[in-house]
Image (cartoon, rainbow, N blue to C red; front, top):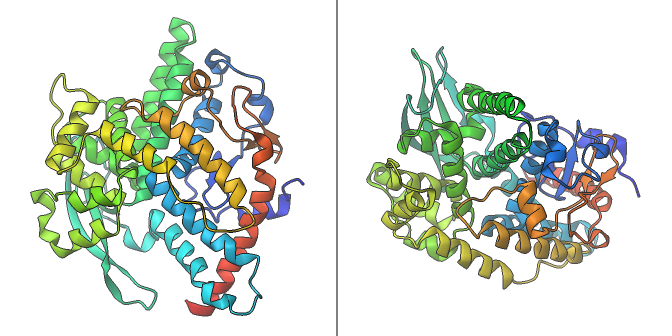
Length: 436
């Protein structure tokens, strides 16, 4: 079975994330990675980093999307979202079964889980004229708000933490801090590090040029006022840790984001709010009950504060975690891997076995990423650890495979899962028309 081109085109623009990137995409409901501008000939058969020296963009893009895949299947937060997906999948094949309407709420719950990954544009405010410029040199503060519920009423159980970035003149952006920004941060760090590793295989002069291009692209990303939905965590780290080097900023931000994606319920119950955020009182309690990784990121980042000369990434993380009343980063990562390995089965559906295999692959990758403070998923790590990385859908809708991957391709079919995603999209939309 091949992916239907008309349906693939129809589903474009219906991604969880805004269409800022059109080069590739990751579909969270189906776990399918699409490479919109890359053909499988660009990566199939290439099993060394040096093979990508002249096409850094290919390996960087692939590992950006693979990091989304790994964060979904190999973190505490991601597994929770995956359960929402499979709960809805258990409904769509039995829509007309008597009494099944009592289970339709699971499709609405999935819609809400999707929505909260980024939050609608309604909650973001951009005013005035000017530019954001360097994150270290800009003023940053927080404000608080709450979501509207399905009836249009403010819901005090769903607080939103806003980060306000002030640029030149009267310009500022009020950006909701959301979990989607954290998973973009880890993905950009994997993309950045993959590109740097590819550039390092070039001759000295060419490598210098490529590295300059990489840093310029990173600067443009971080300073673009339209992209704060993606860059808010990194801009925060630059400000509170007082770091100007953008590469160091992203390593620190991604390392903290990965820890926050792996916090368990008991961690949230212990999480101490920094004085800067105490003004929201009971809303802080609600954010902890909601197990909001973005809220935890803000609290730990503020607790950690300025990164001192000679202080390593893990040392900075542990300082912030200790002030927040939590265990060390290494202990949190290990506990998360242990929890993932003992997790209960997915909700029953026709696709539970495929989901079971993906979780097994995700656990292998989580174990590899958790060995150090650096969560980057790169080709060098994948080759060294023989990681099970999934097939990729290329620009022609052909299925491509990474030659060094240990993934068991007969265990999971991207074509089938895309069709499931298509049916689920239709069923959820239909249900929302009945109740929203």
